[in-house]
Length: 119
Image (tube, rainbow, N blue to C red; front, top):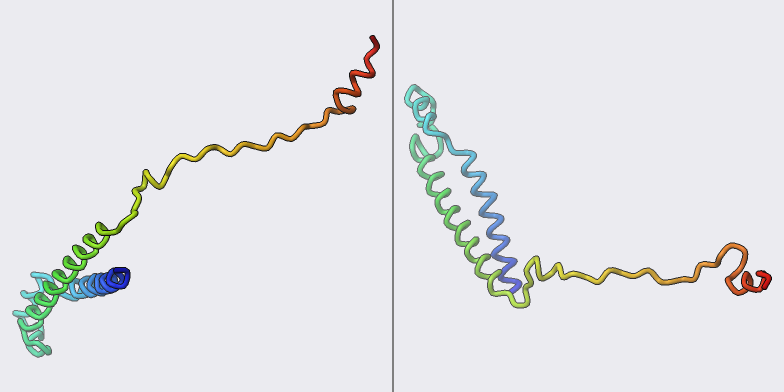
């Protein structure tokens, strides 16, 4: 179960980084106007609209992978046994008591002072 969780975490992180990258390299809706006036997009690898379709589809696939790995991690975290909550882990502890050490009085102990007092 631990290996499966690690594998899902790896796919989750890779999908998250790839999703961020694909979103950042996409053009906004306003970029289409520039391509109509000779923006040079028709000479690109995917054609004038091919790159937008490729990026949109890849982003959608990565989003599905991201959500599926999120659900998988949620399912695996709910199946753990002996998991304590935050309040259960923070059980109150008894305060530590300082050891009682007799402190000598200045001038000797109490018995020697009692001998020095005249009766």
